[in-house]
Length: 180
Image 1 (cartoon, rainbow, N blue to C red):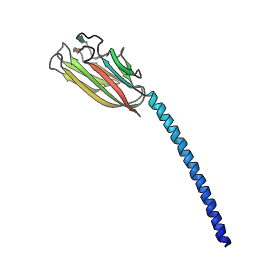
Image 2 (spheres, rainbow, N blue to C red):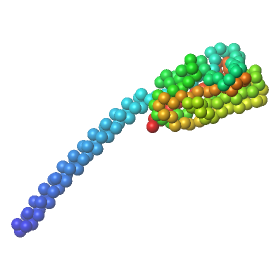
Image 3 (cartoon, one colour):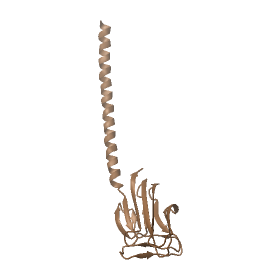
Image 4 (cartoon, helix red, strand yellow):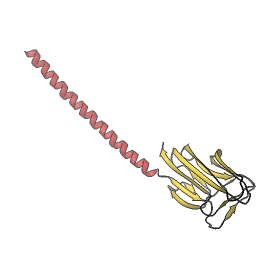
């Protein structure tokens, strides 16, 4: 009988010890979850990035170019610039955080009758647009890119060509899909 009592006592002590271990582990998991939720809220809050800009401020039909060499286009009419990652003085978007981004640009053929332009990342061609149908025709392209913090994205027009705008037709836009 004593052995049963002893075994019963051991079993109860073991269950109490196991319950304390499980409760301790649960508290650790809940504390970690709270920490991760706070970190995620902070990360999301500081990584809101989106911009859209048109080539010129004027509502008058305006040609930009031609240039003697490839030229980075400065989209001057900023429509949206959440996070201030786009610089209208240089035409360059600089990634504030590592992440997945989406970019889109549209160009209207100017008086040269031909448009070739490309989106570049740190000097490397990524995508391009081409149109040769005469003036006032347009071309658009878009791409999703994984960027490192500090990567630079911009649109360049090829040499001896023009691009046209009326403050809303030739545009450059991008946004952070999610941080990595």
